[in-house]
Image 1 (tube, chains in turn red, purple):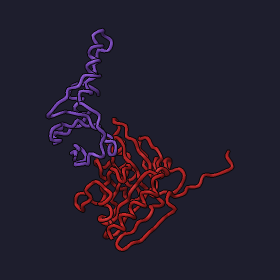
Image 2: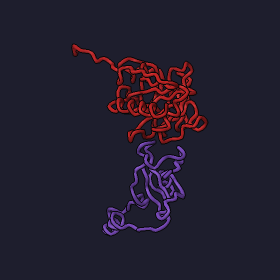
Image 3: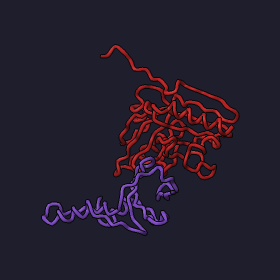
Image 4: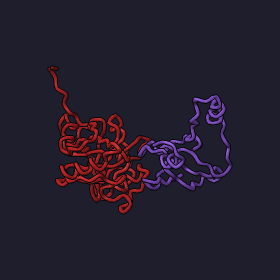
Length: 189
Length: 96
């Protein structure tokens, strides 16, 4: 047995910056696990998830939520979903596998992403300068999720509220992404 | 340039990587026969240089990582049709 323990640290030190009409903050207390779906088991997996948490498999670029709203599933590819859920421990993979209780393949990705929330009435104005996809209220509705590029780097964007968006970028790029967002804030406000 | 992805809707071409002619799907199956050398030579090296509608492979690297067959006019860059490469491949009896 090792005589040390790995401690979870957030990618951006829990940063939270407030501007007029927009807040930029790190999302903490969330885990992210990839759930790979074997082609022959889509139906079996969906019925297991429905039974355990009231979850359905989302349509492409959409999300679904569990009955208690603690687990959100994102569908960015046909054969996999990402589980975004409230959990802070070191064993997110085991935790979600037990909660979903479905015969899929789980891979913990929590520590590989930096998660930044951009919220407030001006959030869309800030994001439309760095995000190439259409974020209009009706096109990118609440619950929509998409993988695209921002600042030339692959980024996932998820709309988790009327005026609230979560951006996921690779952890090593987190500080640069934060900078890009704040430059956009300064240009817009 | 906007590519109208069959599953995801209109996306900027910046998210995609271009590979080349969609004929690359038609890799010869006769690799055990003597005649295959000529077929593989044609497959590997010989390309039409089309001035007009061209079917080509694009990869949605910064998106859902799907392969697409895009029909693009090489003179005007107009995109006329977008299909999933998976569907095109199955239509001609390849893959599962």
